[in-house]
Picture 1: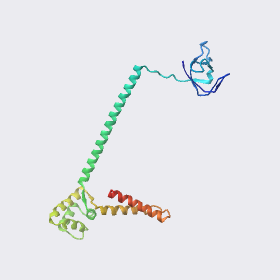
Picture 2: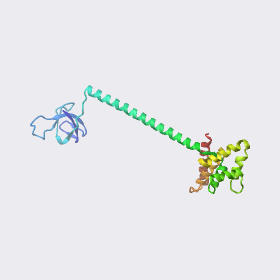
Picture 3: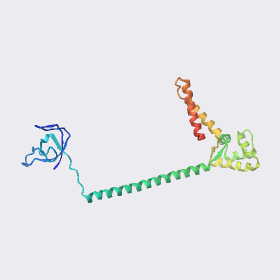
Picture 4: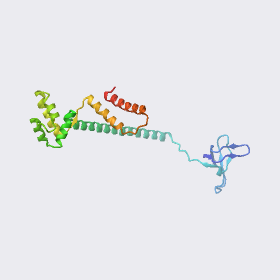
Length: 230
């Protein structure tokens, strides 16, 4: 026996069965060489009904599992899930190690760079475009005027003798390893607001001054809130 699905509405004397109905059937017994034998329903309210072969199609036979086969499949599924969880754990571990390694590299790189006040960093950058590192250090030692290093002189010497050697060492490290701008919160916010304004002025106007002004205010508000972590 097997399942059949009607592909046409089936009407007989007192029976009307809609297309799509699934029934359990067999091929009507008879001449095995007669390929036109109809299907015969063998279960349900229509048991005994003949269904022409052009009105139905046989459905694939559903595999029935023994208890042992079912248990084997369950065990295999659990083993696969366990293996998947192990692989997922390895992936997460590798990803975390990669992230931590990248953070460590970033910290090492950042650690080599010397944080300098913006004015000092800018003056040093201009000097590097014209002079070698030894020449710059010699100028700082002699406090030579006219070389655009006044901001550096002020920063090195205005702090007093106690910090003079330390800051000269920082300048030397900055020339070798590079430097970053050590901005105060006020300087950082001022720079960020200026960048937002410069970008905002390149955006086409909507023609509504109120709407455009609100947009600028919202951009600045989001930036300042983030910077101050409000």
